[in-house]
Image (tube, rainbow, N blue to C red; front, side):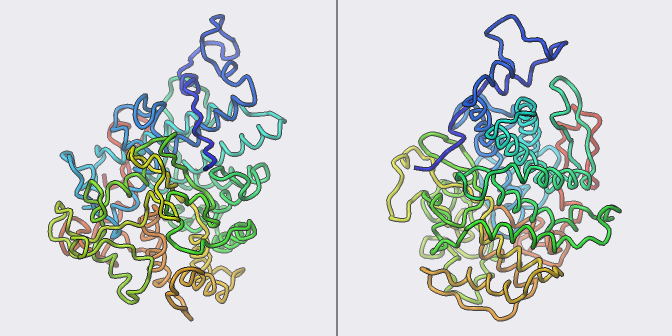
Length: 519
């Protein structure tokens, strides 16, 4: 059975945020009134509070699969972090398209046509999710701060990791983010934006500061540890030229961030992770047994039900018994044409009633389906909860295969502390897993190959938009895929679409916010 830290819930943690007392050090006389002093009155309570913080990234509220949501005013399903992050990272690229039922407002089609607006539901929902999560995490950090108890010190570090992770996705998706920490006491105020580069620096400093206090790699499945922090740092550094553009701040002048990528990845490699013998083992209902998982968001169809990102991929696909129209585009399928035996291309093709090309995006048979993620175990059995419609398959946010590909990319981009020979060996290890049919070795690699290989290895894992931006192929005409920009043959899209707009609803309620250029 999986270890699920966030099966525990603590509604009172959210209620604390609403506290607006004149003297914050006064304990109210009413014993039934919830405050941080009454919530956190035992070690078990602190762990329950930490469980809620992890739940912020996979669940939507206090009542699964829906009910008492953390974020109001939006579709509760869209407010799930993994679901909306996945939609924004994948539907906007060559990897996915979706004939979504009841899409009257275009919140799905605007993503896959690259025509999103500040009023669209999914970017609005994820923005709200991130801001609500930061507030809840800050409240927890205030309560745990300054403790000498070893467990609480680690909980404190894990909470700060989750906050850094939230801000990483904030600057990745929205650019300049409203910024709050535990120093901003609860109450009514309008958070101000910080420039992307300043939040970048904050994330780096936070991760470096908490690293000694985090658990050793693999100390408990699904919890943030030193390897997770190193992976997040490596991702921050790998995307530094994007996040710090157009002008590198003076404090970073002359710094080779790709050396930093290698330094952090080498720490990950020392953590005892190995590749799963079969590629598919990473995406099944018992993928918690995969030795290459570095950091996951965990699902349990019986105890923590949610309409999350993995649920969407499994229940929403086409050609494999799914309920809805989620599939891929022909440009992505092209990546596998040079080696049809590549077992990683797990498509529902013509034999499943699917066509390769997409003439009509609203026709769920146009475009191959993908059934990479499945709610079935390695031995072929299904979890006992399968009949509920919910799933046990965990979301693999960071896994070793990604680290191998990041290492190779950093070497090719100019890291001086890495080895091309080692990079090639890592790539070939992915292509020739122990129990899979070998795909075949490569002898030389370049950046174009790495981008394609990242697509073949990591598709539908929430990386593609970020990768295409980093390689200069998301906007503009350097890479055109079918239905990019809303036309069958695809077309160029403008550079301002590298980030999403600040939601119109947030601009209306917080006049300190400034809309991103182009929107």
